Image (tube, rainbow, N blue to C red; front, side):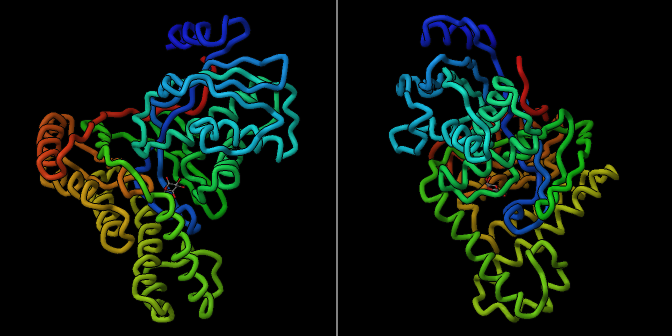
Length: 387
Ligand code: GLA
């Protein structure tokens, strides 16, 4: 990969002198969905697939970007004097946003750079290719200019750039999982205070399989922001009765006694998901630590049901992938992962059942939806690195 990137870098930017190669992973969330902006817990892990970059400093203030995933866009140019998001700037709004965020946080960027990217995260899959680019850019800036920022800071700066520069009101999960990734481990993160713990994922005779729906996402972001607003409404109404800062502070029982104060039944369902999903995540991590994988899988299934019926972010594509998966013997658990409205599912599948799983779920999906799903058997990898 390194040679391939440097070769292309030379072709696009003239030569490879001073260029360095970097990598940041993608992520998958095992459980704890739509809890990270509700002060709840999440349990994601970094993957061995991700985004590669070749980069070097320039002697002027220009920024030149090229992606091997979008070659038709050619070189997209900008400069340190013009750090604003433009529609035509396409994917380069992500690295630009991070450069802007570093400056906002008081760090001086002394010169421009040439940056070439090549990712092997399937496009639009919901495995956080944008957060991967953000953390990667922050990591490159740190290595290139010697800024004193921790990996956790890289996650926060990435999220800040996505919220403030790119206008997506995402939580901290994706950037955190990518910046703090550890091979073989998932990250049990309390998003209320960023306390975290690594939990080994020992699946012995099973693997993590991602099924990508290939559904084109349209209104995803606006629905995402709509769900956030619904949870905020629920919180405000509950605060009339209890002194809480987030839905993540409530147990299931507390919620059941208090929910009557929420006036709209739809908002009750949204809040119920946030509360129950948070508790499920805590239970799931306990189960994993005690090697109760079957129970972990059951909680994954319940997470999907809640996202389908109460949070309503699944849709026929993700429901088909998951419901077909549940029928296959050897599937320990299966659920949608990420924001929803398309994207992908995550399943834990016994080694001996993987071929049957891909065959059966793939065929049923294509018959019902009319186009194919893609399947990936993935490994849990580490955080950003210099190659
Ligand atoms: C997206 C966001 C995350 C998180 C998930 C849902 O991936 O970027 O912050 O909210 O959706 O769990």
